[in-house]
Each structure stands twice: as structure tokens, then as C-alpha cells.
Image 1 (cartoon, rainbow, N blue to C red):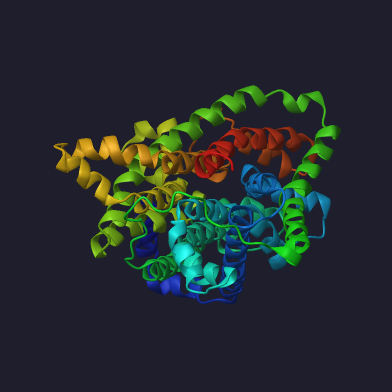
Image 2 (cartoon, rainbow, N blue to C red):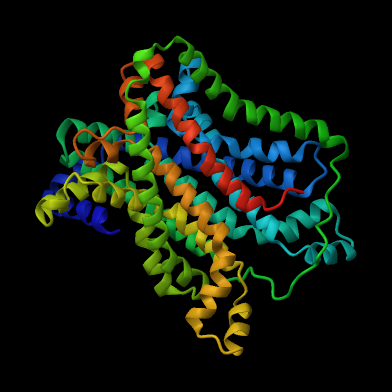
Length: 485
């Protein structure tokens, strides 16, 4: 996980501070820093409000059509961010800049907060809310003083993932001509191939990620979130929206239209204009996409599980120190990760250069936080007393964990693996640089056509990317929701 960071550091040391300082302290970097910071400051809170608000409406209120809206709110996760940007750019060609980037990013990434918030709300003990109501608190006070504090892990974890995606996103912002550090780094690497300018931008980007990690780690605290008993068996009391019902319905319909209907309508419109030649390479691209994405998902779960266990069960400086590099490396643009792996494989293990193993390694590095946050939240809600009870009955600690804890982690494992597979299937830059010659994935084929303004030729691949994402999103949603109410 530290290979990409080491690559950036080694490049900086090779360049030297005297040559690096003028590249960092220049007006262009200040412009990129302002764009990126504004995107984070405005985008992350927006996704938290939409994610937590949507989860609360469908899970804890008497909103009409809750099941429909519960699915609608997670649907944007099946649409890659660059496909969503492609849809908006083709529907409104004038969309660009900060507000265009904020619109596309918020609509694409708020489900990353919505899903963990929904999962956490379903696992909360209703007895706590009943006790608060018995002490005279109203519904809104119960939400603010009882429910919201228990969502801290989900909010911080989901917000961190969103922030990391905003730092590393390329395709979605390139479509609407919004410059961030990542888009500038990609352009710099394409023109100079690991030149000093790109390395300088990478240093600033890594620093931003480190700041985010420190903030998230400090805000997370050491609180426990697992309940110690069986809790109240009856479902939580739903809040009556009353006169606010039309407003809530209008807001959810508007959100679903902007995040799902607009991109899908653009894809369908361009699909109708495409010809048969656009479908020729789709079967091969589909098979290769599924194999590489599946390998990335399995690898990420295996790598993330030990550290997720440490951070959830044994929070402290050591576990945070081990967890930090996972996020630092994943915050770097995929093209830096890819170039780092290219350098290492060529110098140390040339047999791995341009092999599926290297592509999967890049997917694990880039998308590991998706698995880590899901696993950490799942482990945090499994009471340690269950394992202790199993050990008191004579079970070995490892046996107790396998028989008691692992089955309770299946939803978190499935959700994390599906999130990684989704990201890997949509990955562009790392796949282009690391994949064996002749490899074509759905994402690379889409980008090849769309970047050439062949929107009709890109539409079939966009549609297949969406269809391929649907089962993974459905799996996550089913595991999180459990039995429908």
C-alpha cells in the first residue's frame, strides 16, 4: 500500500526541494488548491445531508412509498461518475466549472453515505429511542440527540470515502472541464510521463489526504457502538411527517430525477443513435471487466479484514498508524498508483509487468477504503460478548470468531466487496496503463469513444456498465436492508 507513496517521495527526493518549491508555490497550484478545497468543503457536507436525510426518511418515518424510494436513493451507485458526467454534459453542454463538478459529484457519491447510514439505522437499539421519548423528547430531538450521535462512524466513514473519491476523480471532472489536482496530474503525466510538475502536484494531493485522515481519526474517537443486550424486539416507532410529507416526496423525486433519470435518458438517447458496429467488442470487454473486477474485490476484502478488525476491536495509535497508509495510498490518483507499479515491476519483478496480477493490485490499492470502512463498521456493531460466551463454552478463540463473528459480518463483507467491484469495473487510468496488451474493459472502451466526442459509440458501453453494476448494488442493498418491512 505504501508503494505509490514511496514512488512520489522518491521522485521528490530525486528532483530536490530547490527545483520542487517553484513548482508548488505558483499561481496554478493555488487555483487547483482552491478548486479542490471548495469541492471538498461543499461536496462532502452535501453528500452527508442527502445520504443521512434519505436514510432517515425511508427507515424512520411514515413516508409513502418507502420501499420505492429506498431503492431509488441507492440507484445512482450503479451509474459510474464519469457516465453521469457524460449524461449531464450531453444533456446540458454548458455545464462546467465548480458548480457543475459539485452537482455531478454530489449526485454520484451521496449513496456512499446513504448505504452505511441506512445499515447503521437498522442496527440501532429502539429501546434507546423509546427511553428518550419517555423522558419527554420529541421526534426531532430524538433524531438529533439519540440517532445522529450513533451514526458517527457511518457519517465519518462515508464522508471520508466521498472525500477521497473527490480528490482522486478524473473522468467525471474532465467531461465538464473542471480542473482539480487530479485532472492536472493526469494531463502532466500524459505530456511528460512522470515529470517533475506532476510529482509536485502529487505531493500537494497526498498532503490534503493526510489532513483528511487526521481530521477523521480525531473525530471518530474510541466510543463503542455495539449494544450489550438483545435490545427491544419491536421495530422503532416511525416519525410522522404530517404536513412535511409533500415536501419530502418532492425532494426525493427531484433527487432521483437528477441523479438517475437524467444520465439514463442521455444514455438511451445516444444508444438510439448508435449503429451495430458499436456493439462488436462488447462481449470480450464484458468478460475481461468481470474477471478483473472480481479479482480486485476478493483481494481488497482479504487485505482490509485484518486492519478493520484491529481498528474496530483495538483502537489506538498502532491500529491508526497501520490504517493510515491504506487511505493515503488510495487518495492518490489511479494514474500515480499505476505508474508506481510500473516502476516497481520493471525494476524488481519484470515478470509481473502488464499482467492481470498488477491490474488487480492497483484495484486493491485504489479501492481498499470501500472495503475497509464497510468491514470496520460491521465489526464495530458485533458485540465482543458473543465471542466471550462461545469461548466460555470451550471454543478456541479462532473457532469462536469463525463460527460466531464471521456470519454476522457477511453483510459487511458483501457490501464492501460489491463496492470494490463497482469501482474496479469503472476504473480507467490504471487499467489503460497496467493491463496486458489487447485488454479492453467496458470503461476503457467507453472512454475511448466518449473522449473522441463519439457519444453514440460510447452509449452501448455506458449502458452495459450500468447493467453490470445493478447486481452488485442490489446485493449491497439486500444485505443492508434485510427483509423488507
